[in-house]
Structure formats: C-alpha cells, structure tokens
Length: 341
Image 1 (tube, rainbow, N blue to C red):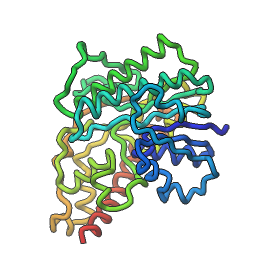
Image 2: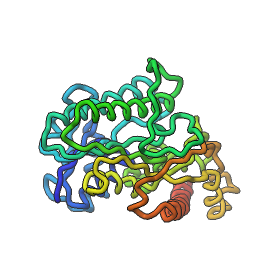
Image 3: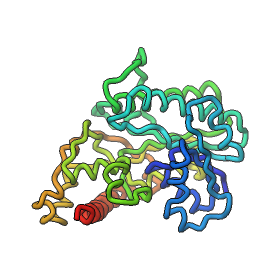
C-alpha cells in the first residue's frame, strides 16, 4: 500500500532516517521545515538525490511557526499518515521555557488538532524519549513505553536547565496525548515510539565540522572521544537509528503494532567508548587528537524494549548496536583525524 506520510523533524537525525526509509519503501512524503534553507538541506541532500525519486514523491512545506493554530492544515491535505519527530532537543544554549518546553507542547497540540479535521488520516506515530517514562532521575524500576509519570503540579513556569525543560515537556506531552485519546476518541490510531539516546549514520552530516556540532545525539559520542564535557549525564540506554526508524514505520503499517506504544533501547556502558578509539588510534591519543571526555557520565536506566520481540531480539540488538558503535567510532575518528591535518 502506498501512503502519503507527513513527517516533521525531517532535518534531524531521526526524522531524516524515517524520511529516507519511507520514500525508499515507495511512499509519498510531505515534510515540514521552518525555513527554505532547512527544506533545501533535506531535498538536496546527496542521500535523497541518489534515490531518483518520482516527481511529487517528496514535497516540502515551509512553515516558520509550527505552534500556531492550523499550522499543519496545508501539509496534511492529501496525507494519510503522520510521523511527528520534530520536537525541540535539549540544546544547553536554548532557553528551557521558550525554545524547548513551550514549543514541544504547542506543536504536538497543533498537529493533533489539525489531524482531527482530516478524516483521511489513519495512523499517527509520535516520537518521544525515554525521559518521558523514566523522568529526570531514573528510579530502580524497569520502565517501558507504557510507564507514565504524573505531570508536576503546579506546572513550572520556568526551568533551571535545558534538560529539565525537555524532560518536563516530554512527560506533559505524553499525558496530554493520552487525554486526547480518552476524551476526543480520534478517528486515527496514535502510537508513541520511545527511543533511548539514538546513534547511527547521519547523512545530514556533510563535513568534519558538522560531525561535532550538528550531529544530534551522535554529538555525545564525538564529545566522548575529543575531551569535551557534556553539561549533564545521559541515560545509560541507547538505540540504533535503523531500529528507531523501522519502529516508526511499523506502528503505521504493521497491523500487529498499530495503536501500541513501543520502547526502543538497550543498556550501554558509555565508559567503554573511548577504549575503542584508543585501541584503533593509539598514536592519535598520544598526540592529544583524541582524549577521553567527561561527558561519558551516565544515569543507570532500565527500559523494556517491547518492539524487539518481533524485530531482531534484544540480544541481537545489543550485539548490533555494539558492533555499530565500534565501526562508527573508528570511522568518525579516522575522519576527525584527517580533518585535523
């Protein structure tokens, strides 16, 4: 079945991989971008160009402000499915309230309210984060995509950090969506995909400089081999970008998965990351090109990866993720080393 999917966040790591997989599968894609430059970043990317897409298979909609009422009406015309992967990420320099918390809540609300107007919409997949199920400080219990954390009462008007605003937004966004499911009984199914920190190849990265500054959660690994400290510890669970993308498409098109929430994560010991690079490039480590970053602090977390029961199996997921980490760290280190000379 050929569908027309509206994808938000296509200029980000997860959204772009979903877009690539969707058009490769033969679907048509509408994607939103906040500027012409962002739209061009996607549509003119070499990974898109080499696919030789049919005319009309990929359509950009430039919408500077996605929080306003009816912002999604235009890109939803003709769409049958939605994947919302476009929420703000916790960039430390962002204002926690106006650039992270408020847009997260408002964009999700605007999208769902617009979707209610279009009877052609069948299924929606929403990208969340494990922090919505574990909170800022994970407890000892094993969380899953079905775990819910009560929103703070009262809801804060300001936040002390980007990560605090991000976590609060994810918790409240999930709560609001659950309430919409119950009270408005939409004509479409809604599924949450809840990944751990997501790592993997990122075709949006076109040079070495972008590798360490515009590489989404991959930035954490780059920091970990170049001596840069992350301002907050990250949760000790990770996901492979291919599994995250595949799960989004499964909740739209696999009848077994429709309307269900899925976690995509496995435990990772980030303290082992630098060992891979130091063994592969000992001379570069001696020269100071690579050095261990304090960003490798992590919070012990356990989340049940429900989707792996029909995917590759949890043990296979761990092996594949670890093999990928080894290969990609060596690749990045090699590129980084060349860029330094």
